[in-house]
Image: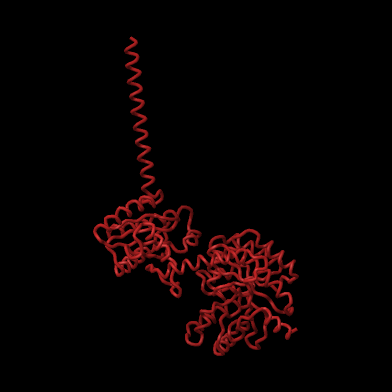
Length: 460
């Protein structure tokens, strides 16, 4: 009897151990699959791509074969997602991944989702000419419309490419080079794909160094490396100054004057634009308080400044501390502010305007929904983008567009500023179209605060 009981107990234990073993095997398979696959798209994970690509590089090294890594980035992903319904952002990424898998398989390669909205492809037997062809195919496949919820969505992508063994001999080196290639070379900001070269790496290192230098400059109590220049905003007919736009200048102790475009780009990318923007606001208001009563000071706001908490209290504190009348301050914004957090930013602008501060919509005419925004945004001024002004004399289409924009703004009783006026011909056309307020080199170049103060003293 005792032996029968022990036998039954042993059989039970063996069965339990077998069940536990099966359970562990199943969990192991689930974990292995999780490590190998991207949970959302079902494609390869970053870890699995690294493993497979590393093995491929070993074989390529032994056989003296070439290849390439391609990093695909979904451009304006956050902005597009803000326009989609719940869950459609995930479905869109799934469709992108499916297209990339088809392309990768056709080229004998592999693809993985390696970021929230980035994908990496590893394609064998590709040289420099082949990389151009692969990039063209990728962009052609990806830029075709996507269907979501019964409607079509257009998505834009950018590709960075790096060659093996030219640019690197390890997975990590090639991925780093592809990431650097995603940053377009100077003067090629509109390019949709770029092949890495080592000058890019040097440039990126320079910019990383500049970011560090910018942090150091911002940490100094007196901010001595920064200065504000001001460009007059004038009556186009008489040339009378009505105000000035504050423009940042960074005097690097070693490099000298750093391009304002590069300074703002680094500040935006690093988030340093928030403390830097606060300094610009305070300095501009403290200097503008000495200007004639009729002059306004225009200060630009970035997306990150609007996203940061405390903008309205900051403006209130600066106005109180400097003694500048709120009606003399114009804060310039761009349409991109409203793509992600429309309602939040509307409340911020309404709060600023309730203080007496004016708001100008900058670069008007370039946004994807300018006319719609013009009807609904709480703004007081509109600045016509310089790209339209520069072709007024040579392009009848530009004249028609500017005329239509002026007519629309006049119907809505919004004052207009034409930016980038550089020739007498442009000024005469603008005057004929009914534009009164202009800004540009013809009417006044950016100048240091002392020169603007001398100009103001002559007016007072």
